[in-house]
Length: 172
Image 1 (cartoon, rainbow, N blue to C red):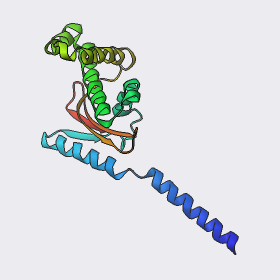
Image 2 (cartoon, rainbow, N blue to C red):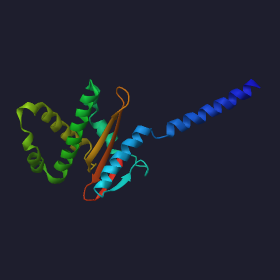
Image 3 (tube, one colour):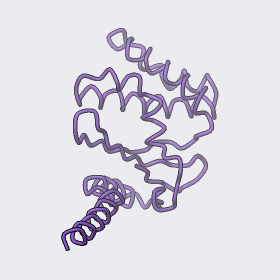
């Protein structure tokens, strides 16, 4: 009798574990909904890559690109700053690929101040990484939302715009 109860309990626990692992975390869904509402204010069509089975999420690719810096971040604020610089580098990399080096230099000329020269050097390094390793992705990042769950655990939702299209995409 107790063996049968243990089997039933084990089946129930396995089923609950599958449901728990497959469910979208509430904070992630709230973050997506926030970005979707922002996009709708600007009459942008939103397509959720996760629902469409998108294998390559721009947010994951971006986090991969800046992972050396993120691993060095000592606080959530520092991680947020690195993500923001990564997004700047991502979009500047697209400008460089699509419009050329001159357009990129023109975009960055206002950032020539000496007090932020280290940050600009880092952005330029990541622009080059974006162009060299992730040049096939031409989705402009137009908005983003960062949530910190536990130390070292980041949820990044971004809103992108395909180049030459009016469709915005939300990806986590």
